Image 1 (cartoon, rainbow, N blue to C red):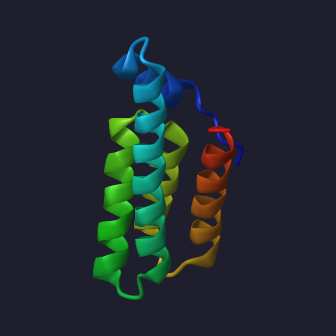
Image 2: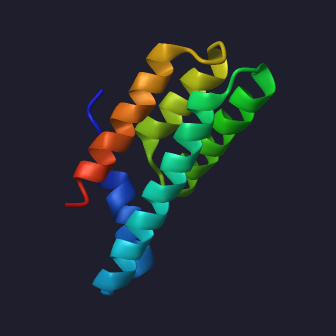
Amino acid sequence: MAFESGALDATLAAAAGDDAVLLAELRMAFRDSLERQVDLLRRSRCDGNWTVAAMRLQGLAASFHAEPLIALAEQALEAAPGEPTIIRKMEQFLKEFGAGQA
């Protein structure tokens, strides 16, 4: 799954306006939140924790119009806790988003 940042970047740019520092801060805040939730998902071993982490990821994604992440969160909600393919996809999304910050 290739990360498409169009809608996410547009949302961040609209929120930051012409303020490049604010844009960088928003991207970092999104990445930090994404990283925390992916870590929680990775460590989840029961249905409840897995579901909460997936729903938080879904909410984060929806807030920033990150459609690929919304789809991943929905896949996580349908999967068993600890599903390695979902975790790998989430980690790949995080990696590709982080690479776009350089």
